[in-house]
Length: 194
Image 1 (cartoon, rainbow, N blue to C red):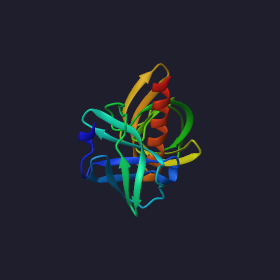
Image 2: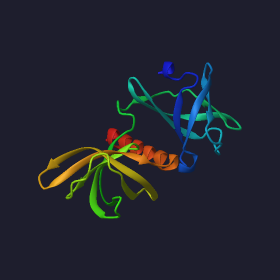
Image 3: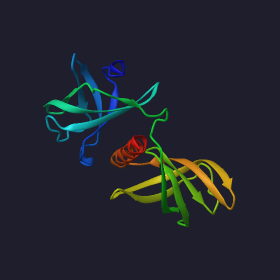
């Protein structure tokens, strides 16, 4: 696993506070730890428990570890004792059964149900067929975090009397994407621990 932690490798870093979720880049690899530079300075503490993940050619690498030291926007992090490769997708996908409303370019409202979600997109069920590669505004709440984005269907299938559309988020803030990444990772870890 240590061969995945190299200079300039980007990771998502998450603490127990969603406000600390951020992208970081490895700046130095030491014998017992590695250093990362935060994209935006955040408040971390020595001995704080954190989670890091990144995409690798083996799948999504995930581990928990502890902050060793802090120097402004550079955080020294102990090498983890254990780690997991979760999946080959860029973003973890978890099942969800949640009603939402899409808005098309003409401000028509379309009822939908989220079947699964990731930080990259959604799979939804609708009675009305959506159009491929068209943009639909969508807002929903995940763990008290409101996400406002644009959904673009890239695959549509029929399922009885409904349509299943899989697609990506076209416009999503980094803050919302990191909130979704954190939500999906926590759910995936809960499922794998059962």
